[in-house]
Image (tube, rainbow, N blue to C red; front, side, top):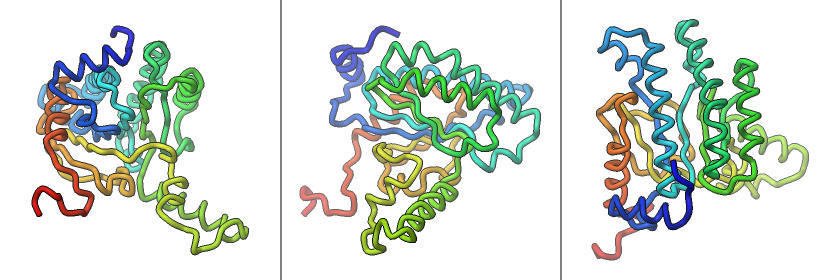
Amino acid sequence: MTALTPETMAAARARLGLEHEHVPRSVAIIMDGNGRWARQRSLPRTAGHAAGAEVVRRIVTEAAQLDIGALTLYSFSTENWHRPREEIEALMGLYATYLSRERETMVSHNIRLRHIGLREGLPEPVIRQLDESAQATANNTGMVLCLALNYGSRAEILRGVRKIARRVADGEIAPEAIDEALMDASLDTAGMPDPDLLIRTSGELRLSNFLLWQLSYAEFYASEVYWPDFTCEEFHRALRSFSARHRRFGRVDPSNT
């Protein structure tokens, strides 16, 4: 990956026929289908996760090159702890390896790492790699790579509500002062823009307890391919689909009145 500059990012968008104002500021991806990809090839599920990790590397790079402001990846949900023990151990090993391996790239290409979800329950090596990568990239000002790891949106919303309730109980704020901005600031994603585009792979059409508050006005793109087969070209198709849509946010499009 070459060094990112405004000129190289503009050139990358131009090659795709995308104007800057038509590129989503924030993209979220539900990376689905690793297990089914492996089963089709008579491979263990862990092989699908390993193949999916390589796709993460390519898509993160491509998103940064296109000057997308934030990329949030649904990596491991709170419900995923119910999977077989050997699969969970393999996944956690992949997370630690990925974070260590990609740290230099994130630093040199101005990508800032952020984790959302619970730290409790994550293995110590994963927490250490998360912390080291977050610290190493803290001063970067380019794309935010947000890993939703041990994450569940309902639990996140409950944590946010409890934060607000404690502030009300302490007399810090009045109930009447509670608004959407305060709720935004009380979630794991505080300070990040809401996703403009949600991509889900493997043809599934559900949110799976992912960013329920933040995705209120996101555009959806469902890809039929499994995540290990998700290419930069498929990513480009999602971006072009987004660029062709008219976002009204509940208002009437003046051109149709």
